[in-house]
Image 1: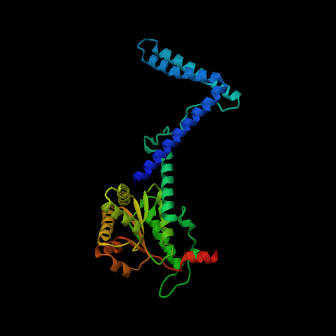
Image 2: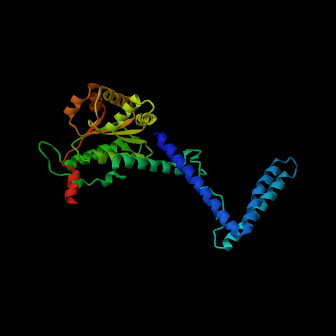
Image 3: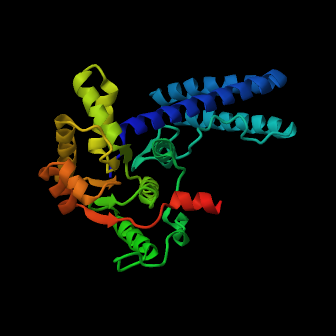
Length: 329
């Protein structure tokens, strides 16, 4: 599992901004109290000077260098106790003026010896959720939010199972696709509009983010337009960057396949994208509203053979859930 470079840079910048704001707040806090209680300013000046004296003592080659350092430490301790007493006397916590970082584990750097600190990891996850909320157009949702009662429990036509049973099966497949170990394989969602494809894909996306799996959610039309921008507008670095993110992320969710403007170039780009990710064993979820016959007619054998051969097929069924919600609401 890897981290998305763009979002990680954004998260790191956010952490730096918060740390700088924290430092400014500490400075303001000290200025206000030192103006009210001048002795606090004197103590702070003494503590700053003591750092230089301690360094000079430590570097001293004299026999009593250790004694000088210990003496300085005792003086500093006495100064800190006096400062704490002044603060408590006026109703402030004794640590109110301590220059402590926001995060005690990484000192606001974002990293510890084992790797990324939890503080930066949390900001990174929030950035992923924010981006997904924007691109999907849906707040964080999870499998427990799926209301199976919206799906009919009656079998329709020649179907051997009801739409409700079918959704239960799809949820089971998705839970196997994404477990505690990460994502495995690829999923292909097909079915009429409003049958839950986007909702289920969103559930998988948000669950993956909570497990530090990098996720990109894009519509086929939007992504393939970026390939055209990158080719015909060579100065468009944003398009190139977005394409690289889609090619390298842990999980790519490609929505609405078949709605894009099609050309020989975009078909070639789609094949290269799918094939490259299959070779590198990076998972994908692709969804479409069009039937298998239309896909076979619309795309080359090189694409369809991979879609139907390398992806687990989930066929969504039932009536338009969105219409049912409106009628019941």
